[in-house]
Length: 221
Image (cartoon, rainbow, N blue to C red):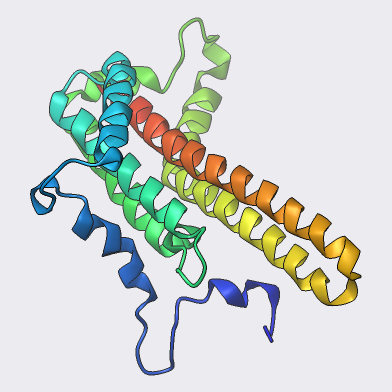
């Protein structure tokens, strides 16, 4: 029995050894195609997704190295989101410790690159066009604040969306002891619908994280 509702997100398997964080690397071992003799359907789907992402990212990012970097982030987050939908597998993307580890160095490196190489552009970006003179100090403050909290909003958005679905599934599953046998089937149907919704959320949140990161990258060029 859980001490509280959020205890299911505790990253621990035992008091002496925690292996749950290794789930973030499990699928990464199977991804390289050199370990497969014949390409399977998974690789065909992966190639279709990469082709779609390439077309999307080329609109905002001109550097091919940056494009592959953002695609790698998308695949990493997507795989971890999907793995969290399976029983007894830890959802690492439901923790700020992992999401901040991705978003904070990414934002910091983009800011350092922008201020070192395109300082004039970064100053101009603090004040939108056609801003009245009296509002310029306030706009600089607002733009600076919104820029500083970007890594936090990226990580909190992903964390909150992954936690919300898991909490809802846990609350519904806790009702099974108080329901009749005829209502259990309705509960199972609701949980199946929620799992489908969670799968779509896992895909959307990985895409949103990648898209916002690419937009931040386009602002410094």
